[in-house]
Length: 178
Image (tube, rainbow, N blue to C red):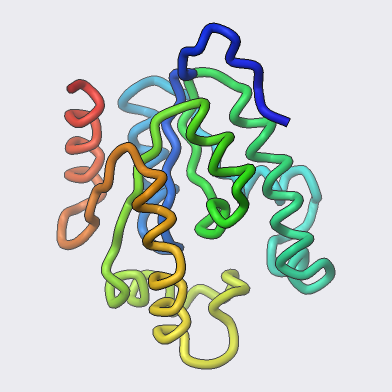
């Protein structure tokens, strides 16, 4: 299941975790340009491999089917070196994914306030876990459920509030130099 990593070293990868709307893709893409690393978004890779959008995978296979596909993509990407990957918000729910990420790179938790995440995602109809019902309440539940997992897994926790994506990217660059 896991890459060999025989030398006991971590691969030179950077992984972004956090709830939907935290800025994982935006900041990951910006940081990849700054650091001259290849960027991957695990959700985009799932769609590329399956040829269908994530909401359809959820509709046909449910969350469990999606998580299995997500695990295969993360396992594949974690074997690469010198990449930056934005994970799906729920990727850390599978213990296998947590192990893969932890053993192959640095993990940055982009932590957003629920109200900020809501403002960023409220018009997005492509997020299956937020459809139907009160989106803000759903985000609050996801935050309560996942924040302890994100916090326990992260090498770095970066709060995303009023700062711009550029300011956050610069801050992360400085963090990684230490």
